[in-house]
Each structure stands twice: as structure tokens, then as C-alpha cells.
Image 1 (spheres, rainbow, N blue to C red):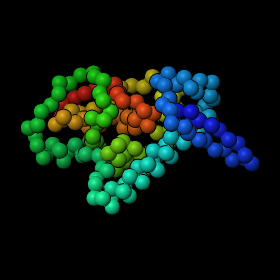
Image 2: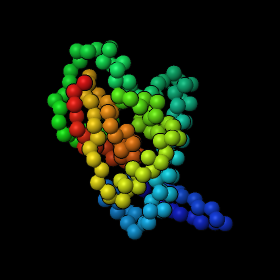
Image 3: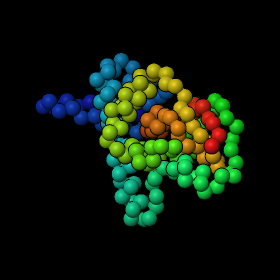
Image 4: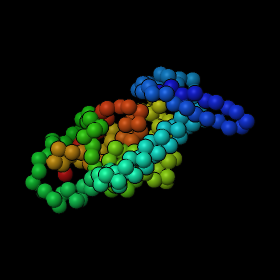
Length: 172
């Protein structure tokens, strides 16, 4: 992702171009913390706006954009297959639900609540600047993964165009 900072009359505008930021943050080396926060804030706003727009479309079409709730799935089919636990690299598109934060992120793991903004921005700044982050904690159940810990890390990774994430997986 490339960005352009425009400064006019004490107003800063951050514009994004469609290009994925490499895992090492190569396109933004040399940016200071304030610039990184501007980039991250722009990403957050973009993702939240996309989630709101898709949410409106979903209401019109009757489609759900809600993350699956782990407790509802467990009650639905307690016998479904489970994957062995351990450290793994997981495709982000197989993460479909949450153990506890179904109202904070949509089914595409985009933020829905403004109270998640600062945490999301801090994670994005760390990720963009190449700071290593711990593996997320996921629960595997019925062919899907549910987030126990790492909602913001997964949301940021997805917003940056990453397709896989390191996780510690437990069985549901």
C-alpha cells in the first residue's frame, strides 16, 4: 500500500493506493511514529467504513455480516470434527467466529466499534513497522477457527492483505 500525505492549511490528508504493505514494512521505512499512526488511522477508518457499508448492504439483502459465536456453534453440533491442537499457520479466511467479541468485528474481521480504534492503530503501527507480534489464540471447531485472543492482530493482518497468520490452536 502506498500513501501520500498532503498538508494544506493545517490539514493532513492521507490517501491510500491499492498495494499491500510488505511484511517487513518496506514501503514505509523511515516513517516516524506520527506518520505510522496516520497511516494506521487511515487503514482503520477505511476498514470501519467498509464494514458499515457492507452491513447496510447485508441488511437490505438479508445476509448476515456477524461473526459466528463459538458458544452457539458448540450448542448446535457438539460432535463436529476438530483439528489437532498446537502452533500452526492458519489461513485468515478460515477464521469465522469469536469466543467473545462478536459485536466488535464483522464476519470479514473489520472493526465495527470506535472503542477498538486506538488498540487497532497501535497493532497496525507495530505490524507496519515490522515489530514482531505474538501468535494469536484460536479454537478449531467444525472446520472453522474461532478467535480466543488476537482479534485486533487478525483484523490488522487482513487489512494489510496478509492471507495467513501464526496461531496457537486449541480444540473446541
